[in-house]
Image (cartoon, rainbow, N blue to C red; front, top):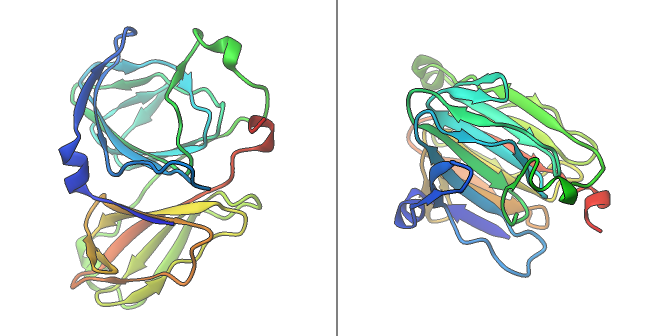
Length: 245
């Protein structure tokens, strides 16, 4: 399975929501999640207005979040661009509170999730099992570094784990071609363009657009455009067996 998330699609379905708990936000989905597939990926942008809190909650699927603009806190930890946050299934986190400006963050999942389960209201639905948090701050190349990039580089921000979880940065010089490589054990990978652009088939994928590639899809190539590019690779482990019953 290959699914491309584009800004054009996200712009076409941008919708405002307001929950009873006070959480206000705009949501823009980059593609429609498929039904009845081994993977049913999701990717969407949340635009959370200033001084709004997204209360403590959990999801029933593994997910990555990429904070792209604005500042705030997650729990007591500061948020600044470009923070990567991984939360495993049934792992509580938050609240996510925006600062004096709108806080934007993207959510990526390999498996579709029915929605946030807020605590303590849904504590009776909480399941025992492994809990997991990971956070990293992403460092990007300076313009002159990108201009002088002469070969493809792979930097493991979080090296591959046995069950497939991994975070990597791929840096491509202009006109370079690269091949998707899945980590052992993962069920799929999101390739997110952070700087520059790439060509994927007949599509140009620009900054913050992305491609999901399930692990049963191999031998996939992509190429850089006329300028160098930096790509964030988010490799997903399967949902833990204890949560699949």
